[in-house]
Length: 477
View (cartoon, one colour):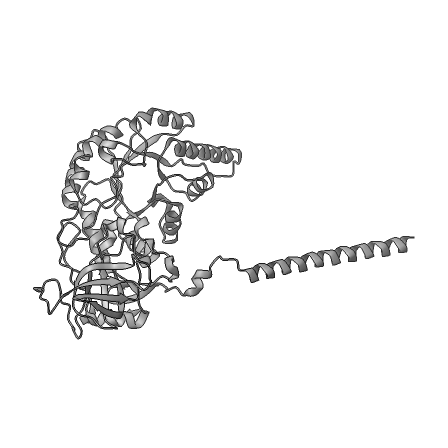
């Protein structure tokens, strides 16, 4: 872990996801260059202090006393970052068994993990239950039936073996599909199917106690959540054993920095008021993902080529769209900024009055020949040179998590800035990763030769045993 000079400390901007932001460089040019020199380029850089502030802000925005926050780790599964959420008192929301596995590796207790996914096979559902996850929100009657079947078998086996401790059944909920509030979605169970779902659980001595709402991904319209609270509560009350409301995720982040994002304070106040007025105590589960982590990360890259097409600057950089999330996740917008050559202090380029002599229309292109390998188009940037650094902002959610080996590029390293220091939290890949799990022809040949040698050895052993038996026969004779 390396220390930062005081002049390099981040100075987290005093904004939160619902407040318009000015896209300044998140740290100084000196620090950017220090990180690139130390860890290489391209490089994911996470601001742990800013992440902690955002977590605290979201937590305090919801005053309802029975609230449980569960970070949606589908957005980012780095263990070091998951541990920050755990230290802040949040649990984990899992879309897949892989999310659960990472959460357990990060130190979360199974009781702190909520599973809300889709279409698990028998082996996967069994694994989720064997891990001890205590809350499952299921996507269909078939998934509910599968879960009940596996739980019934587990209880039966435990009962037969008196040495096993009794199994406590998990809390089961349904992901709701209600077109008037969830839109045209494949996710969830319709209220008209609730009776059948209740019958399935009652038949095996279980109960349905929760309702899970999924609004959709990246929603910044606060009203899309506050205006459906009454409808969700009325729908949940159709469950005789209702105990918890899982308000899901889908909370947005303002990638367009002049836009207003999700208003957590308004949402928290209205939701807390509605739940407090209920005649019974209901647990509330909220699953922020993108809203919590998007703004804490920057992808640094270096310019490797510059060319001009009339007045347009074409920058080639040493990263690619394969290292970032796909455009539908964030509307295709990425804010890209840089530091002017020789600029020592943090300075916002977009706050200047653009003139033809200071900023130029710029396309930022990746290091492949893929026709859509644009990190940004029509950005306003100064004239840059080879070796200059650029910063792609707000890549904490669905950035590294959705990176791939498309076009056979290894993935970048990840670094965490925390308490005035920086440390590596994921190593940079090299080209060996492209061969991982591949079975090469030469290796197949070696395997076959090894199997042949084993077979020959077995034959020799059998022949030796035969000779021994013959010798014994002659002796006995």
